[in-house]
Amino acid sequence: MLNWNDVIKYTNHGNPTPPRRVEKSEDEWRKVLTAEEFRITRNKGTEPAHSSEMCSLFEPGKYNCKCCNTALFDSKGKFESGTGWPSFSEPININHIAYHKDSSFGMIRVETTCNICDAHLGHVFPDGPAPSGLRYCINALAIKKEN
Image (cartoon, rainbow, N blue to C red; front, top):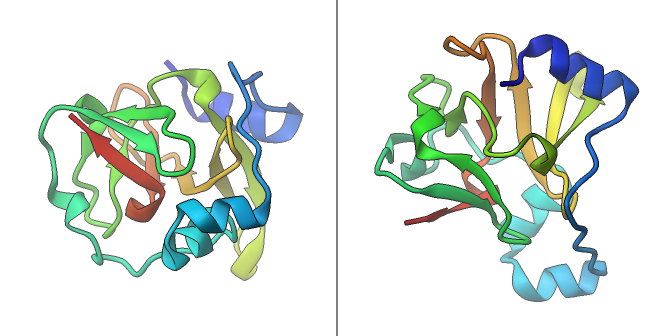
């Protein structure tokens, strides 16, 4: 199980090798995503807090990348963080998420992206529940629920 030290190691020294890659042109992504999905996943946007019912969705299932359909999170690791975005304590597979230093908006954070297609997902913070202590704060429009 990953912890904050692992996240910082990946952020500073390189991410795990992905199991495969999905690469498309900007025009190809625009054809398969809505304008808002494109803004968030391809242009590192953020949806407004509390804008999705996905925050209160806790039925069993997996959450896949909206762009490439890679399984990223399991509902077993989903929790109510009170932040207004879906939150997870760990990814399904270590090599499905990539970590990048984000110093935008005058803050230093760790951005999370899909390691398969580079879609912006959100950020990860060291204030999640045990045992990982991680809170993956993910844009609902960057993921889709699979039953």
